[in-house]
Length: 382
Image (cartoon, rainbow, N blue to C red):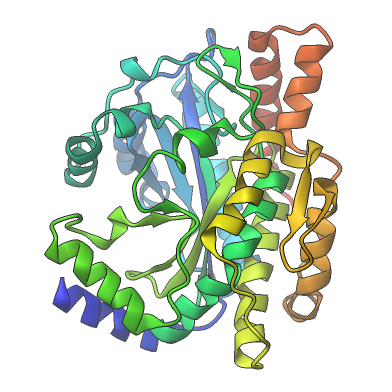
């Protein structure tokens, strides 16, 4: 691992600022029942035969009924988005040809996690062996964004600055009210079953720089807690292989418009945090227990509740989260050509309103799957 840590430092030293990667996770569904179906390996193998480009941009995520598309490293957000739109088009075409559907909610509403096979890779065999029930229970789907940050010390300090923002991004993205065949009462059940269950997950400590982060990884390795750095699942983390800061807090989004707007907001947050660091702006560094108060509110209520302004110790409506982030990121958004996010609601609210109006859970999920099918393959100018 010492060599890996040395290599990570070198990777960050040569990283280019503000490159962007987008990762979107989808549930693979039976088109008639909308149950989860374990067909990742089949779709991967067909892509390898018929569409090598797509094969290079899809990957497995724990269970065989999940598939992830990755943009690869774009020169900026617009380049990454163009790549991801092409990958989506290819993936949805392949899935349609093979008689399957894709879903994009943070959890599947009724699937039995006990029936979902883990994909057969060394990494996920290790995850299953190490975590057992915690891994089996984690049938969840999310949206991740990577942004290139030069210098490992700088990347860790950018992560420190993003910690208090994690609940805001979660509240905006919440899209998983249903799990295990019932209304969970939560806005993001995905966060509860993944972020609150996995070790080394959720809100990280503030490390202050690369030296402290490296000592932490070395401690985990020395004590045989981990064997690879990707077993550190913090909701924001420096990614050693890519030289990026990765935000991992958001639920998967039902529509392409929501996913793209959220990805743009996450890119802006990372870029603004780097700008603030470079310009010497003071670090607001609350204890994890303070941020956790907002995390719970975001998990439970999403945009229907109230969040806490941790600097002022005052509540505010969670609907103001996007406006606050937009105001803070305005300088870098102007430079990067990123639109401000206008949030009229999230997927959890949309689904629960349908349920409260008398629709069944099956009908609600079917409507979400239709939204996904109709929106993701669209060709929209960048």
